[in-house]
Length: 332
Image 1: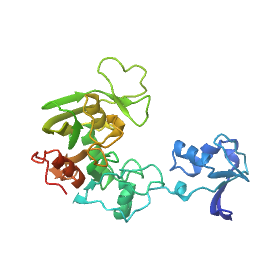
Image 2: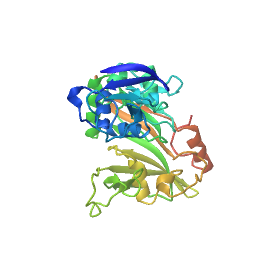
Image 3: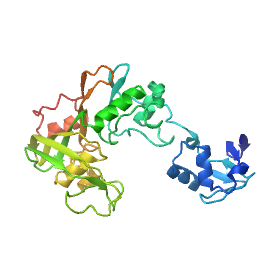
Image 4: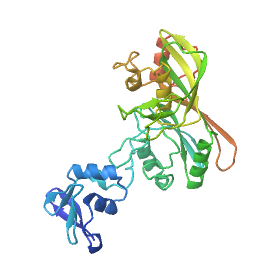
């Protein structure tokens, strides 16, 4: 049973524990009432004292009994079952038809979130301009999004507009049929071309990072690792930095950043993998831009290619290094 009543913090939601759930833990009960919350999000909300049992804040392991009243007195975002629409976000739509979209994500914007707390992600933009996409994909928090880019990576993101297109495009990713190319500026002088084929795993010392493992050894005890291959070719070199064209067929978290750092060429402006606390070129972000996306159209089967020019702040960095003659587009 669910009711709404006025409380000291304004309107609050409350639930009465039914007889058939007597003895359930608070975190399990909350998830049964708010299934859009993950266990981690649920426990975080409980820790923030968002859920009260009678007249006291609950703890995740508290047992509930028939007739107990659980009241919500937390921040409203915990109740949102999908990404809130954000009409104030500016994201270029560079390709669209009845089945797919391609967006040019700016740096500094997350691709998606996992709760209603996130209001400035690409998912929030899609919820505003194409709300029907919240029913497409593997999660309401990732409306139609076929893949993702890191927050500070700019460039092209592929979006499916119906479930059949989503499944087709995801299958293309799994089989390496989607072509993705990036421009990357890295520290040091790179080889003319190269391939990094090393599995990736979460860094045991820093959960924000991925670690590139050696093909032989160093893999025992890992809870999970992902195969990944990154190819690169040198476009230009100047003042201690190499401009690369990078391509991937896999899409592991932080793949390019971790692979290039593992061979001694971390991205410029990337303190997480570069070990540099400062931004040597004053870019304000790491230098990685997804400029090329090629895929087979999920309906017609024709080849579709979309490209994006280098953003202004990255083009300025290239100019300062004397690499403006490299074939990287004319900037924004």
